Length: 288
Image (cartoon, rainbow, N blue to C red; front, top):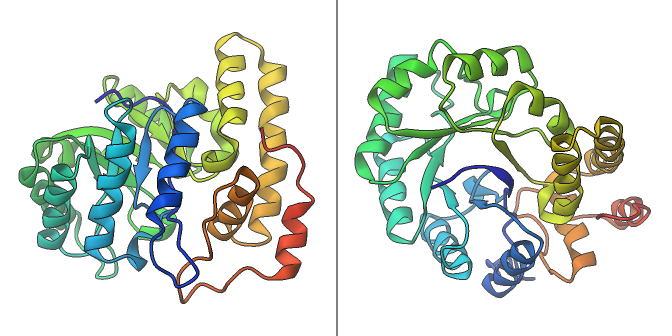
């Protein structure tokens, strides 16, 4: 598995009855492949993972892997609170075609870090594919840093780190401490500013509908065209500003409608998008 480049964290399309719309999911994956996606991160936060059943999460992974057909990696998020449950989901996700599995740290019970290490070890021991550790302290309440990551790596076959945090200083410490580790940045609004630190790419929700924009940022940066890269990042941030006035997942789903992908609303208890929110998003200009 080569983890790099721009990797969309896929939304989960639903139909009017709230069932997973697998046909629209296939359409979305096919569209993003055509646009040059470097991989897919499925059933993560953007995919409403904790509002899905295990069976849905496994089948989503299967459908995406079948549609991708080996062209790019498919990373399945298998996060749970329980290690046994996460290990089961990891094993089934590998059987469904995942190139790697990923997980946020177990949350809610304020686990000791040694317990978090055991959680990741249980996942790693259940599969033959790499594990992508998911650092998202804003939601999980757990911070993975340069010091404690070593404990996970001692007991787990770590294939990468999804770093969703604004602390670029800590990101730099991780990069220098683990020069061979594949690091994928997770905050779309600061993508450009993670590149000098030495990340290998990024995984994000807004890549569902403006993948080309981030490819242009990456290409401009690599060519040394910093003013151009900054201008495009500013464009992306202005769109993200509008998304955050709604809710990022809800807004991403609605904006995908402009690309011909019907995603429906998010699942309860999320509220459906309002007409006022639609008007706010309709004013957004070019997504590419």
